[in-house]
Amino acid sequence: QEQLVESGGGLVQPGGSLRLSCAASRSIFSINTMGWYRQAPGKQREFVASFISGGSTNYADSVKGRFTISRGNAPGTVYLQMNSLKPEDTAVYYCAARTTWGDSYNYWGRGTQVTVSS
Image 1 (cartoon, helix red, strand yellow):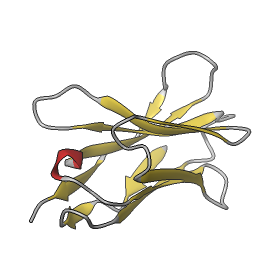
Image 2 (cartoon, helix red, strand yellow; image 1 turned 30 degrees about the vertical axis):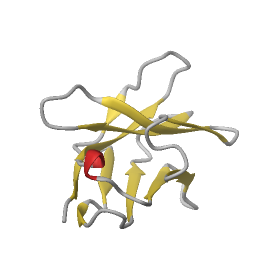
Image 3 (cartoon, one colour; image 1 turned 180 degrees about the vertical axis):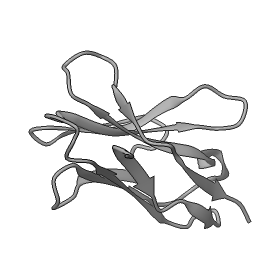
């Protein structure tokens, strides 16, 4: 079964908004951090935002002030509200979860495509 599933991607014009959702299976034990990464064609996967247990959030400089990560009401859910989208935001967006306090995420979704174009 899929343990981490993201959704909400699509095509949007520059300046538009999009909200991504991620839901983690309860089979994932003790998630302490959920986050979003993205990978554009020909580029390496890059960090976008994270939500840490306790309420701390982190954002990449490129999205700060435009994107907002938030925790859902249901356990193991997280959202990424993306406003003022730019063509440079075009990428496959991946939800990730971490169950340790190390630097790496140990669970990944399959990704959802976000395309920002006129």
